[in-house]
Image 1 (cartoon, rainbow, N blue to C red):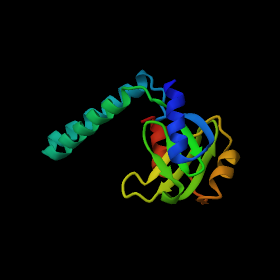
Image 2 (cartoon, rainbow, N blue to C red; image 1 turned 135 degrees about the vertical axis):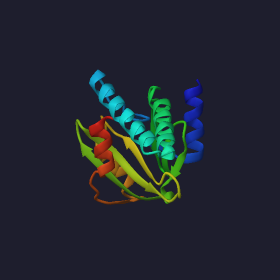
Image 3 (spheres, one colour; image 1 turned 90 degrees about the vertical axis):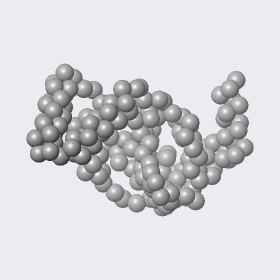
Length: 168
């Protein structure tokens, strides 16, 4: 009942839903004991380097980084409903992004490794958003987005490659 009520509210405020699908909040990479062992040695090495060189700020910053990373990645990714409506993109539990705030979109699509819809919003913070589209056809999404937002051609960023390669 609550799901129908939420969808009805979304339709009233954000227009008719043209396409919806489910996507994980973030990708969870498999990490074995070797990964944790190597990460631990690197972490201890950075802490030892900071202590030995009397770089307390580096050591504290790294410890805060490790703590935040641990807090963020010890929970399971939520499965979010993504809806493309006649007026924009609605991400369940987050917000509605009108097409007027999206300046451009592109796909990074190379299954089974990566299948992402990326778009740039005009907000000052969190300006590039990523939606994982495994199981979706990019052509269908392109057909819905192209009349409202400019599609550009971009390749995968080095930071995304490093995150995927290191499984972080």
